[in-house]
Length: 261
Length: 325
Image (cartoon, rainbow over all chains, first blue to last red; front, side, top):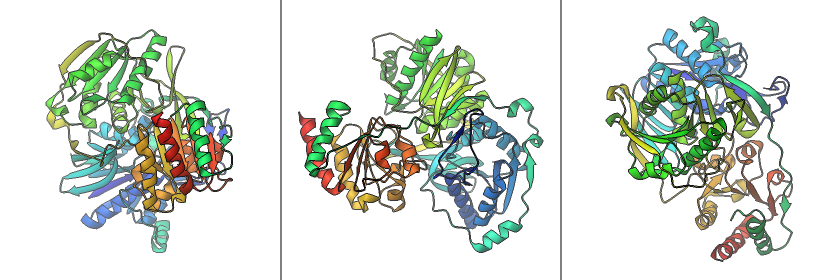
């Protein structure tokens, strides 16, 4: 199987976000960057499929030069190859633009890919849109937020989470899958893997070299504002007393003051 | 015109779709536009009449054998054809699992971008302006979309419903031209979770537990509380989920679900930044924790410092009493 996995470099989930108000951008200095947590499930699933069925796993990232570190992490987990689609545009919060870059890459460099794996959502732009958009641009079926996947011959089955239920999706290959927590338990890199990953050459393809027209990669999202949410006022503490007194005071407040029950 | 995609379950229109349709009506009013609604695939006549109470000028019901089961590919194709024919200025979706799956696919088919999971929509200089949380709510992004139609998904439980009014929308049923062979993946089975559970993403009230719950067996206490309250669901912090105490579908936070219920209870949750990011937009937050210094108290509207195993039974008794009055 020829599997492509798309990963994104994002700020650590423990990060405090600061905003540069003039440029309406996030202050990147001092932030620790990691592979987007959901993408690790996608890498792990690709490795497991390769181990079961043979083939090749290529990890791909659209981003700045620094995303090479993110790709090395996936190589250290066991991916065979990595490619950086180097993008001079900073986070534009525009999923169509990224999907067009990925679709152009797949069409020109990996037209025989069987499976395109993504994390269900980056923990940065939170769009959860690039997998579905890529699937549409390439005319492929999609299954998103997948917690179980099986592939046999030229077809597959995916189980995806919806509100209060699980949907079972049958699809033909090639297909686009986005991975959700629960799909697997991502492995840690081994020392051997880390050493091997360091030695690998990662080809860098500038986004401009993918044959897209300039208007296709011009961001369609216009950022009008970026702010941190207003911090909440400290709330009311229930008076110290017995649990029964605290519970009575709380229910009275929820009923008479907040009017939510 | 603003078009809203309507999702049904078991033939009934989902509340979050009515929220999106209500918001479409409010913004369309400001822009001097009408609204329309679209149903795709199997849906009863009842659905169309429910919708007309929320003021759309037209309800279009697209049907085709290829749309009998949900597929993002088939549904997006049918919707794109309708959009090309009717040229709406915007297309709204509820930000449900289906909306988050389908809206981007439609947008890509139309060659436009997307505003996903919006929590606010405004009109400025005749254009729609969307606000959406990023980094799971650690920042708020306000954006406009440069190309039309503006495709957006709206977070459930955020936008108020309009007061339903008797009104007669034009209902149009039509066959969508979706070739069966073009749909290469579709839903073949839906397995419902046991019981009549509400998902955390759709719940009005969320009762969450963290490390302080001490073990999987104690989540039954939270289930009991949830059973007392209408549209309530049990949530959990990442550490409770990672300890295997409860399924990850219940996880609230940056790597779980971002929620905005009317009322959020945090039992034994200290309030790690990645948890706070996922729930701090809840309308009213109640925290119960042994540690008076726990960061959760900084975002809580009401706090109780104490042993949750003593507070929960007392709270259950008080709630029963209050709800029976």
